[in-house]
Length: 114
Image (cartoon, rainbow, N blue to C red; front, top):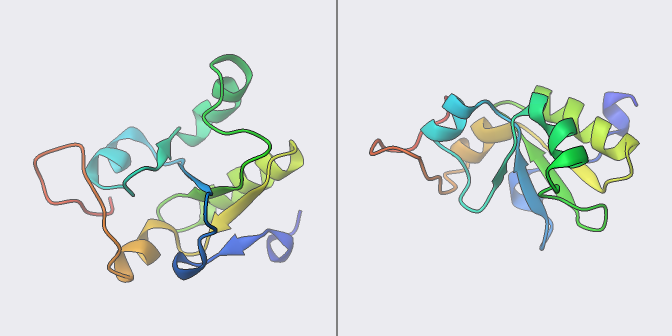
């Protein structure tokens, strides 16, 4: 799949009812993430889908997010290839933060994009 064929949404275009799938590493997640997002690091997703009962289903739209949009684009393409309704969040968490959207952290620190 070519990057220009990958479904992409902006922070302002998130579809209602979509699952936000954050594929960043644990340290990035702990620093700051979107409240309500599902966290599955990129390299763990195939196993989670195959063995652990996936946090997503083929019937639910999934918006994949990482720091800038590169990793999430790969994951969204892989999900699409495997029958999921996936799209990439354009600009990732950096776009989210730039739009002053709320974030939460897993520490006592103010949330930030790591």
